[in-house]
Amino acid sequence: MTRPPMSDVIVTNTVLPSVSWQPLSVCSYNDPVAVFRFRVVSSSLPDNQQTELQPHEISQAQRYHRQEDRNRYIYTRRMVRILVGHYINQEPSEIEFTLGINKKPEINGNTSWHLNVSHSGDCIVVAIGNASVGVDTERINPDFMFQDMLFQSFSQPEQAYIKASHDSRFAFYDLWTRKEALVKATAKGLDDDFQHIPSLNGIHPIGSDLIGASGNWTVTSFMVFDEYPAAVAHRPIAELPTFYTLDHSVFG
Image (cartoon, rainbow, N blue to C red; front, side):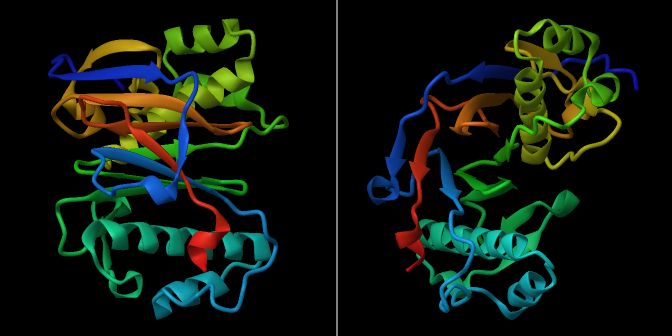
């Protein structure tokens, strides 16, 4: 697909070589952009792990055949409810969510805060901001034939960058998470334009039709855990996003 001729949007891609992950206890729940991480380390769930969930969420959890998928879903839903509850001062079990464009989750009745979720392997990442946000993390799979996806998912300069990288596999995942975080932030989703979503470092003038949204965007790459590259997309802000770690004690 031909790129739109008009460049009315600026996308700035950058990387944080190191991240200071703070404990959740210091979170003020008013950061312009905050990223939260949690690692599922238990193969079983305590009896009270479904307390905040709605009946439809419990039903959805039971549809997962694998225990690890079921656990991750439950932890994800509880994590989102607990965090959002702090932001909007509401009991986690009482929060209602709606699905917006391309099924992007939104907080029902609240336009002050926006969220996005990503999970891969045993890692869960939630981004919350005072404007639209998108987040993506991917566990690096040493067996995945990423080369088969280069032509359809990346521009020629991006393909050249990945192939020339000393770690082509990491470069693939690094650029992929940037693209996906941005199209999740704008609710554009993965479509025929995905190849043209800019993912290399630097400043990229593009057309708003390409990403499905106007205004400028910043996409910041970081590592969640070893082997888990990630990116968060957000509107330009004066400071860097803040990063927090949840442990199992948060869930009671």
